[in-house]
Image (cartoon, rainbow, N blue to C red; front, side, top):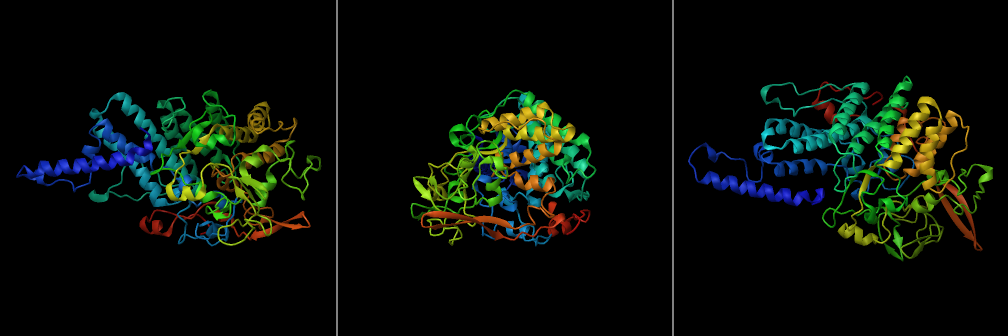
Length: 558
């Protein structure tokens, strides 16, 4: 049974136990009449058997962020996408108005919601506490496996806090002030928070299987990948203010551990790896799974082209920016800025690299038997009203073209997984960390070669300097991981959000296309004026949480 089907079973168990308790109580005339309210499970019942406790663990799995059913994406908080919708929170971040009083709950199922994330951490701590109390109810094998899984999840939830807020309070037991215990915790430092996450990842990895799990459960590879990602973030300029090279070396070593497992390989088809027929393929390390219709994905009704065959199909929430489009190379592997690339700004969509056509819907591209035109007078004329593209582009990557947008909005029919970690990212993580630690050695070239060759591109030329390789890795990362909720973290940790070339202080551009006598003219147009301050690279702790906990200290600048 798939993990995401647990809700129905969980509700059945709640109802069953409630009825049993009430029936048993009605037969006695003593203190047993004091029973839990109907529909409420006690810890004793929840952790009485492995089956019951599995429902509790499955509820922790269900707390994974839900990007496939969320119109609010971090690529719009960064510079990969922009829509004119202001209710997503991206506008609050990108117009410089964010404050402790108006912190968006964030994309991906309340990703930045401090309270929600700590409630998920509490679930993990409850599991550890109660399984220790009732350990005689469980086999050693079950307890070892599930403890490792929940330890991974605690690290994962802390990683969400860490990569958005910095150092945070470390809580390892369910807090309860009924006995007068002080439940307020101060923020740990960035090194302390990192060390805690690393320790949980190590503990989880030691007891998780080194396999590709096709049921969605955590594995050794998932725990090590999470550790490697958090270490990469911690080694980057935002957190590593002294440029300590040992932090880069540590991140490289951990990502190399994932590579050395010899469990994962790049899937042959870059685009198809994200679709349901290829769920849990050779590249997937960890993913959230879906089972339609109750828990299916409706991404096709939220992210694809708005008007298809004359009908409004979806909300169009993936609207790639011109800067993202411009970062896709030509098919010869050269960037469009290279005079030898063959790029023609008045015929910009020919001879581009394969990932461009797999990821971007541009003027003249086919979609569901229609030709999408974003030109002036086209069927999706740029800035034409409603949800129609602001930039002149729509996203294609991650979407199943066989699913109609309207259908997706109505019934959530897709069972394509949301991929949280995949091997392609590990290779890029390793290449970046190793390049920063020692420079562009042979292993850096080799890791990048796997990614480039799958994309149909030649390897990078030999003899690159560390800074030139850094620029190539950053561009490669932006393209390979587009729309996978990675860019927001990358631009912040690299400290490229602000300054003369800051990606969130310079204007955002789209494309205006005008046909005159059958000849198109392509003109970049300003679609948004970004305002972003240095201090915004760390999110503000919500004012409501500062008021609750007198030991919390706000991030500087707010």
